[in-house]
Length: 116
Length: 115
Image (cartoon, rainbow over all chains, first blue to last red; front, side, top):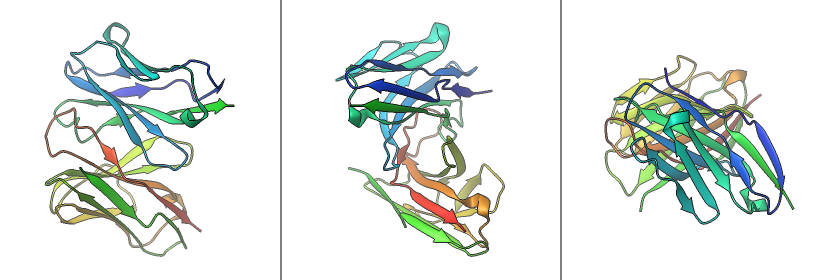
C-alpha cells in the first residue's frame, strides 16, 4: 500500500524563524517520485519540487530546501527565514508504480502560519 | 507555456440541482486530466482521471460524473447535488505518459457550496 503521512497538522512560527515540514511515505515500489505543493489562501496548488527515488541529493532553491532520506522514508521541506507570504497549506505527494502517474497520493497537508 | 483554467470560480447551488464545472488546458496535447475534491480543512481526493477523449476512470463511486468531449477539455457534472458535494474542486493536468513521475499541475479551483 502507498501512503503519505504529514503528522504536523498546523505549525505557527514568527517571521524569520526557520521551519521544517515533515513528510513520511510508504511504498513497495523501487521507482517512485515525491512532490511538494503549496496551497496559498487563494486555493490553487502550486508545484514546488519533484524528486525521484534514485536521487537522494538534497536540493536548495532560495529559502527553500528539501531533505530526501530513503533510509527513513522521509522527504522533509525546510523554509529558512520564513516570511508572512509563506503562510499556506503545504502538501507532500507520492507517485509510484505503473499507474502511479494517474494516482498520485497526497498527504493531508500541513498548515503553516507565519506571524509578523 | 501550458495553462489550465477552470470555471466557475465559485457557485452556490441548491440541493437537487445540476452541476457543471469546466476545465480547459492550453499549450499541450493529449494531456492526462484529473478532477480532485478537497473538503474543508482536508486533503485531496482524486475523483476522476482521463488519458484521452472519452476515456474516464472513476476513483470514487458517488453522485458525480466526468466527461472529456475534446482533447483538452474536462467537465465535472452532477444531475442532482447533495449537501455532501460541497467542497473545493480542482482540475489538473499532467503530460500524457504512463507510469509514475508525472508532475500534476492544478487549476485555480472552484468553490462549490450546496445549500
